[in-house]
Length: 311
Length: 310
Image (cartoon, rainbow over all chains, first blue to last red; front, side, top):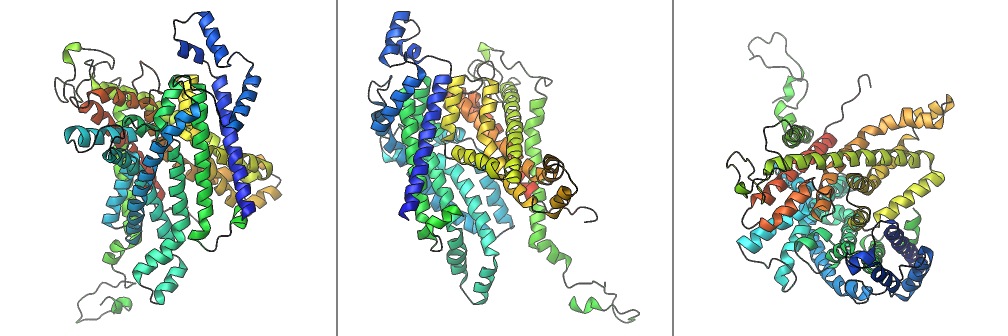
């Protein structure tokens, strides 16, 4: 067990390291000069050189990478060019907002999508099921920025129930959450339906039914019990992906999270800020993935972690 | 009632003529059966999906031929006209440009990017997935590790990064979307090839002395290509959505290309006074993507037709 956790932690950290290194290389490979965007297009060559020296951009790339590695291990990625503050701190201040939004969205998704998927799997190929099925297809076909703008116009402008942007009150959480959840509900409920349909047709279920197990227990305890791991994994993976910033939705609702931050950091070529965002979000995502794996034995007593990893 | 029809009574004079039927299952039963309903649902999805897709694609293809004002023709005297006025079916935007024309011309760019991206990702995914599944060993290890690594990367963030750094040109965007999508095709192809390569026909081919690559290309890939292309069709829907999201964030093809995401993001500022500038382009995207998704679903659920003689 401890070995397994250590091994997974090692793999996770390696992934994070490779990710930030890839980003480091990509940034340096790309055309464009952060000094220009910092000092402005009218800056003289001397000013640009001064800016480059200040940020250590005049050094050879390998030396920059070495400095970056040192910074990585001390957890200090340098000053953000545009915020004039430690980059890690800027990202850390925004992280709670993204976490709140992602948590709310994934909870709403789980609460709606699981019962919906089970409902569909219990009446396969009926008219009602086809109707809901088509609705879920529509749900996964709507661009989230468009859904966001539509909800915003409908429920913040025309009928002003919720605030239009930001996170001043809890009401501000409602519309972004719904926007994200629409797509997630569509995806997860279809997945639940698929899993449940397979399990409901399995021989062990027929046996249980012939022994007189009640229908609700058949569905929830027997079939759902066996669908728990894939469903939980899907929810967890989606959650981990959201921590990387629900970029589009954050931009639409002016949500002060990391998603809108990364867009800004990219526009201004704020290297330390880009690196800090990627590092923190990748760490969090890897952590969540590990937690998901550790939760498997709780969901299914047959799972033994060390062995499952090799299978 | 229908049970006693198993033995037909020839010359049963007094009896009313009862149609002999070989089974107790009536036509009504068959119509109500799950398999029939599934087939009908699949057929329905195929038809509706085709209609939705064609409804969007045909006008897009014909955009140059249709009697529409030029997509970039500005008429400042006809700014923000609501739909159905002065021959502007979708209305006009803040610069007096015909919205329908913009949506159709933008659709040409969006669709081209989507199709190219899907072709590239499909090709990469099928080749690498098949190689990984068939050769196993270190080929499989490398492909699988790359797949895993990419799955754990923050996708949209990486796409934005690449586009922001390398410039939002059409080749870059196409490439970026293709890179984002190939893992799905590769994983599916790999798992299918893993099953195929254990089948007797592969051993037979090997004994006949065919080269490994020949077996893979001539015999295994044709057996998995159908299902793989099905996934590619669904990826087309995703590619269109992804491209519009990038455009919305300002990382799409630059002017003069008005892609769908850009049109919506332009219209966002006028949403309270001119609802159509955001709503209608969005509906066009939804219609098209729903169509493609329905089509994919219908094709997947369609009962497989047995080969003749099989």
